[in-house]
Amino acid sequence: MKVTRRFARRFRLLKLLRAALGLGGVFYLGVAALAVAAPRRLGETVSRPLAAEPVVAWVLAALLACLAGLYFLAAKDPRRYAGVVLMLVGGRLLGSAALGAGALSQPGAGGLWGLAALDLAFAVVIGLAWLPLRV
Image 1 (cartoon, one colour):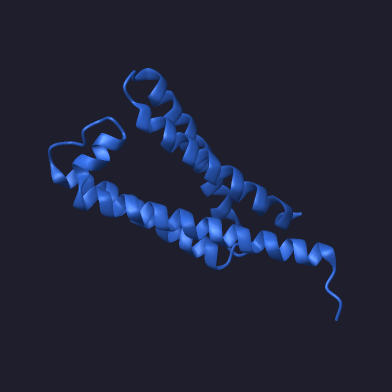
Image 2 (image 1 turned 120 degrees about the vertical axis):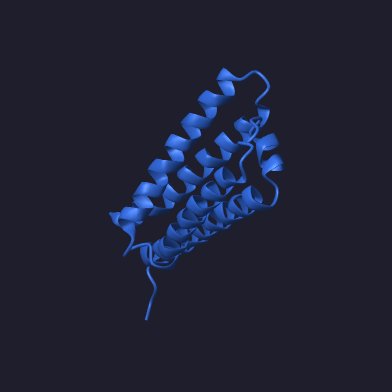
């Protein structure tokens, strides 16, 4: 059976999409672990100290772990969880805008620019890999 170029391209895009979604899930799991294990370090990264109560960091970690689970579900079957993929792209775009606005409003928040760029990169890669698969 001859594999057409279009089929091969869609397969490569699906592979890229799954890898990007899996990497996004690993990233959020890592941030969740950092919020529990080293909340001060996470606060230094975003140039804002986390609340003195550790419960705030634990709740943040729980929410990030749930978000990582959504990334893993979408990575397993992007066609089935297409709505989740769309929400993840939108969330990453909004997160990038929010982090960029935070970096603009705080003079010493250089770490926020890196996180904003990372969010934007994830949104673009996931969106560009997902869109052709939907058409």
